[in-house]
Amino acid sequence: MLFGYLGFSRHAVIHGHSSSVFDYLYRSAQLIVMQSGDVPQPVPWQLDIARFMLPLLAAYTAVQALVSVFNEQLHFIRARYMKNHLVLCGLGERGFYIAQEFLKKGYQVAIIEKDEENPLLERIKNLGAVTVIGDGTDKEVLLKAGVHRAKYLVTVCADDGVNAEIALQARDLSPLNKKHTLTAYVHIEDYELCALLGGWSLVSSGSDLFRIEFFNVRERAAQLMLKEYPLTVQSNNANDIKEYVLIIGFNKLSKSLVLQAARNRWFENALDNYRLKFIVVDKNIKDELDMLSIKYPKLTEVCEFITYRVELNSAEFEKADFLYNNEGRCRVSSIFICFDDDASNLIGAITLNRTLKHEQVPVVARMSSDSGLSKLINIGPGVLDLEQVHTFSFLDRTCSVDAVLGGTFEVLARAIHDAYLAQQGEQGITLEGNPLILSWDKLPEDFRESNRRQAAHIEKKLQAIACSIVPLTDWEAAGFIFTLEEIDLMAQMEHERWVEERLSQGWRYRDAAKNIRKKTNPNLVKWEQLPENIKEKNRILVKELPTFLAKAGFQIYRKSF
Image (cartoon, rainbow, N blue to C red; front, side, top):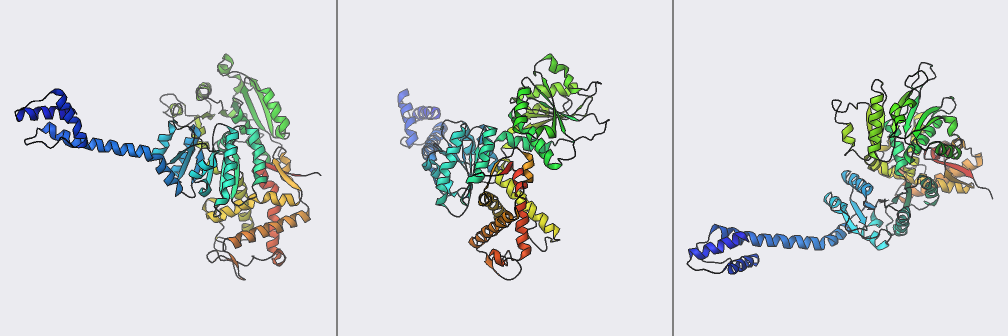
């Protein structure tokens, strides 16, 4: 507009006429619709700039307006052609991290978000996600996001009830597409409720078209933290005094950490009489531990606890007497700091690292993400001297694709495949003789899905012998024993399930060695016609069900009538 005004005023001087300021402004405005630019030569350079740039700017603005108006419709069109994608409901911080990680892995992602003013919407759109504004509990909204064609549904809204309702609505829509299984991952904030619902998910997943997983990020965090920073079980050597694990802050995360470590220890070797030793520091600790010991009666057989009621910002914490034995020697082999806020964890890490500067004791601090305060810990020894301090990024670790998808069915499916590999190994069968002797990550997806379906069928087998599944509290339940008749019945049921699955996938019987490429197998026969050695393989697998379930956090119980 400025160049237009200057150009028209200069043009008037060149051609010997004059107009008012308002005339020059009006003619400049007309350039937007290309109505006043055709003037006699010579034309000042200012006017040349204006008569080209103003129409271009107008066209650009019009295109931007059209894109803005039809953006939602364009997203609906994209969503209509998506399949085997992820539908995510709830674009909070956790949801954003999950969506971002799936996009990095090459998944198509559709986001359902109720708040159209959510500032994260624009950011996730720029990363390539499709967004649908609406309520995820509305079936029409779920259909717009293509949930009936999706491979995964993840619900991470703030309300547990909303998350569950979304999953149930999606279950009703799953029969619309019979080509694949939709797995819903439902976040439940309360750890105890999540464990209870986890048992229900196994009981209720009777359909091959829909599977439901309940997960809690703190439980996942504890699993991943122990995998990344495993506890070292010390020997009974009297000189080996660093035998305690120190936990600062006893909250939901640290409870999960203790339970995971204790359960792992029990299943590793419950008979060597060596207990994990914990020092727990928090202002309200004893009652929490008592409750945990009541609920998990084997906990005190595996673990020994020393507790200190100490607040973080106190002189007692600065003195840190809990680190030392009666002789003044450090008794701690590793430290986990688990408060819910980053600042407290950083304060605790720096304080204890300074106190233990002459000891080689790793300090693991729970932080929200790899950014922000976490960067302070990794800026180098010349600044804060925190070489022994390690960060566990809560969001980055628990919102990864592997962490989200690593639920109950995945754990059971992996355990079943591991048992299969062990069987093949005992018989001396190698990769040359069986192309399916592969690690889980290298196994073709259709065979991994077969293992998941086998996991989903466990409850049906147990129902046939008047048994069911509950969350694991008695770790001895992993030694549950079936009768010979029960084993034979469930082995037959598994074979029949397997035959039905294979036939539906285009496999056929052939009296020759199994051929994966041609989809032929000599064992696609009735149970009575099955060779005895193949029957025994099914029986062995059934005997291992209590162990598989215990690894996933469940136990078998007999129903009483």
